Length: 498
Image (cartoon, rainbow, N blue to C red):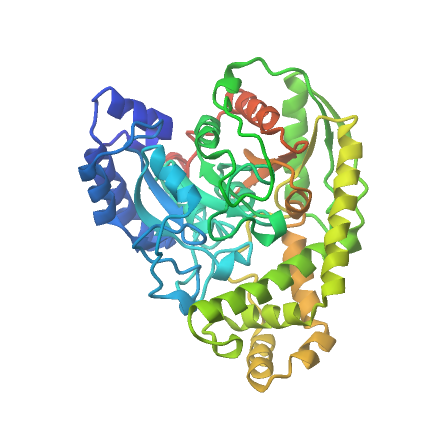
């Protein structure tokens, strides 16, 4: 076992292999040993692909920037030929991917060694990772708390030192939320920057993007060089760009940054979330940036309605797609009660309601465009509170029984009229009120690990840039990483020093 494994990022490990200081097989064996040691406590990896990883090495790896580096795939959209793809659902247990998705092809082209798949909430629908089919994933910083979602398995695996980088997808914060919860760097690229094909030309009407979670900024930048660019199914003519890694060496110009700690959904925000931004503001000012308190004009009711309409509509469509794929029907699918209820709500949304809600996305884009006429970036907390405890997003017992009974008896209209569904949505959004906006506008956004609470839990700072400007985000993140290094701040090292 390579004892120095956790002291290197992915590019660092690749360089060791290139220098012949260690072999890809030795690195994989180390990653597997780390997984066997850490995973029982955190439940980050739900599918072991150890033999698959060894076979990759045996058959020869591409000479990419990450050649020989161990890697984990999120078990949602991460279609890897001949391996299970559960989407976090019991309905898909036993489902085998017929081919590689475009992102997986690009991951493999970089030389990564895939040896497992990580846990995700059912269909990636929650900001926590607690699927009934596989059980909850726990945060290595505190096992009683969530690593976030929906890329929570990937985030927990990185924080636990199993891998330096793992895949994620972000349709409402699902890269940035786990990054914030786990003390990692997480970048959601611009709409169309990375492909979602060939099975989906775009996912969630373009709200979702795929990339990675990492411990270092340079790993994220180097991976974006690999995966950026359209594929044959991409609906947007986004010009392929590279130079994300090399731009980190360029001097960072003084930026004018707006910041807000007010929830975009007009919900309460905790003192910890506010303190995290106040800390980041001071750090930015010390680096020569101008930072001003400005809240963009975003209608909270419109944002809530627009996001939830898209969300529920796609749950309904995904369940119908799943039913056809599995030769079943909507009502008989083996999915969680809450998922089925959300699908029912989606079925009740009219085409007119869906289109009206989608048109409002342009209003949010116009508001952000107006802000960016004066400010380079917008800073917010990534989370509205510290990472929630495991089970905190669960329905209460009476509500859970009610949901099960209503689904069984087909009385969903009764539940809709009760207001429970809206109550649940608002309670969830209260904890996670800052990330969804960038999904609807398509802007790139990142979570940077700059603050830990008094109880020792990480909180991220989110930065949102104009559409297409990942380079400014990455350059600033690299500057912040140098000013306040976080790479060596890990759960294992913090526990050892306490």
